[in-house]
Image (cartoon, rainbow, N blue to C red; front, side, top):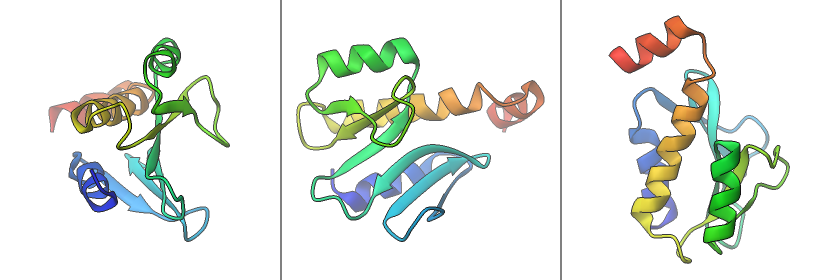
Length: 118
């Protein structure tokens, strides 16, 4: 997967948007105004930081060389996945969707219900 394919996938998620709130190199993807992924545009190695269930975050780090604790994030909840290593593209997409679910499940019940019903 290349950077454009990764960006297109993130934007294909229902209700997602992108912005550059920190600087011109940190592309943030949001769902319902909450960040679910960060794509650094200036990194030499293609990677994406995503939110993760704390137990699954550790399991992923232990299972894949491509997964590391996310830099500048709460490492209990955030992982960085380096693409084109030992995690295939479909698995990367699965964990991006998991990140969306992790964000949505923390929203108020009414907002969650509206998101999943539409």
